[in-house]
Image (cartoon, rainbow, N blue to C red; front, side):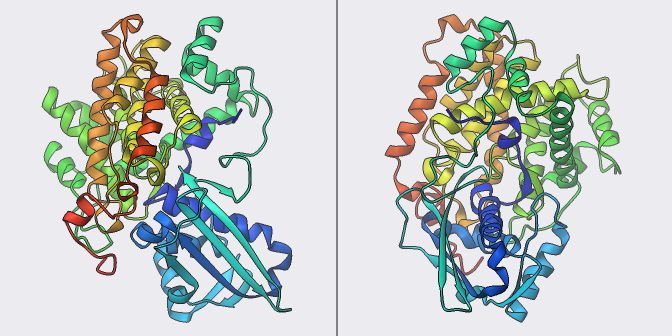
Length: 477
C-alpha cells in the first residue's frame, strides 16, 4: 500500500505547472544526483520530451524547469527573480553549468527535443535524459512526471514515493478512512495526525504545514498587489489586483495581516464574500502563471482553490474572523484536505495529462470541501460527502489550455472550484450522509473510468476544445 504524507500532497515549488514544470525540475535533479560521481566526465547532454510534455511543454515552462534542475537549483529555495536571468544566460552563452559545477556546451533549441508525435507507454509525461561521456560511452535515463510534482523512474514500482515506516492507520480508500474514524473516534484530521507521527514529530509537521500556509497566503497577498500582463504571449491581464483595489476602495496595505483585517472590516454580504473568494483564487493562479512561488494543492494548475477556501474560512466565518488564525485550525483544514487528495492519487490520478482537468480542479475542490466541512463542525461522513459532491460536479472536465499556457481557462477555473467547494460543504453540513446515493469511493472510481474514456485531445495536449477554437500557436507564445 502506498503511503502518502500531507507534505507530499502540498509541496512548495515554482509555477506554472506541477506536472510540466515542478515534476521535470525534480526529475532533472534526480538524474543529476544519479550521475554525480561521473559529472566531470560528461561531454554532452540532451533531454527528450514525449507526449503531453512535448505538446505543451513550451507553454508550461518545461524547458525552463529542466535547465534550472540540471543547473542544481532547488524549486523550494531558489530566487525566483533570478530564473529569467539564469535562463537568458544559458540561451545566450549556450553553456550549462551542471549542478553548478561542470560547464557543458548546451543549446536549448537543439538539446531539449520536443517529440510531439511520440508517447511512451507508461505515462503521457515522459522525459529521457541522454548523457555522453568523454570515453565515448553513453547513459540514458527515462523519467515520468505523474502529476502533482511526483516523479518516477522507468520500471520503478511506485508512484513517486519511496519506502516508508508503516502507518498505524493505513488508508487506501474513503471506506477505510471512514472505518478508522469510527473505530478511533477521531476526526479525519486526527487520523492523519496519528499517521504523520510515524514519520516525524508533531512540532516538525506543524511547522512544515504552517510554512505551507505561509507560502499560500503570501502568494495570495502578492497576487492581489501585482498588476500587469502575464508572460507567455496571450496578453492575459491580471485581474486580482483590480478586484483588490475596488473592494478595498484603493487602500494600500503593506502586510498580509493588515490586509486580511481590512477585508473583514470593509464590507459584508454575499456578493462581497463571493468577490473575495474569486479574488483569492485568481491571485494565486495569476502568480502561478508568472513563475512565482506556489504550493501544489494538489497541483499547480489548481493551486488557488484550497488557499481561497481556507482564506474564506478564516476571514468570513464569525467564529474565526475576529482573531488571527491559529495553527490548529489551519492544520486541521490542510490535514483533512490532504487525505482526500491522497485517496484520489492512489485510486485515480491527479495528473491532467492522464485525467483532464477533473483530476486537478475537481480534486482540489473535493479536498477543499472536506477541509472546510471539518473546520465548520462536520463529522467525518459529512466531510467525505462534501468531497463527493464537489468532485461529482467536475466529472468529465477537460484540460484544453490555450497556447499550452496555464492561463485560459485554467486561472478562472480555480474560482469555480473554490465556489463549488464552499457550496458542497454547505450541502453536506445540512445533509444526513446515511441517505446519500453516491459515495466518495464511487465518485473516485467514476472519475478514473471517465479519465480512461476521455480522448487524449482533452488531456493537457492543447489538441482540442478551447485550445483549437481560440487558435494560438505555441511559437507565438
